[in-house]
Length: 85
Image (tube, rainbow, N blue to C red):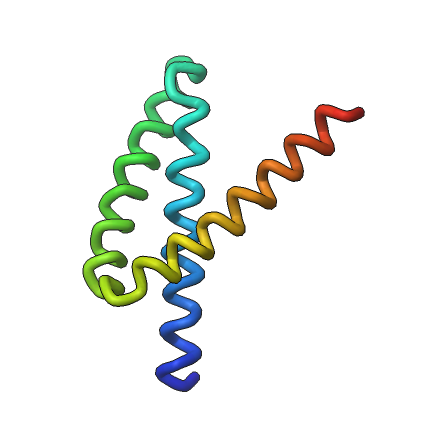
């Protein structure tokens, strides 16, 4: 894998993690007991991972934001299509 390919894959991973963490905020307060505990641990670990990945990717912030927006748009499309049924 070239350095350019590796950087692209890291950018995609960061955007996916960012979108996942933002998406998970919809479930805050909705889970109970063990699922809630696992969710809270998962969310904290995701935040830590994001911080570390963003430290190595500072120069790509706008690109990552654009990728994250694309992911959010796809998720909104899924919501819209699901609600039509």
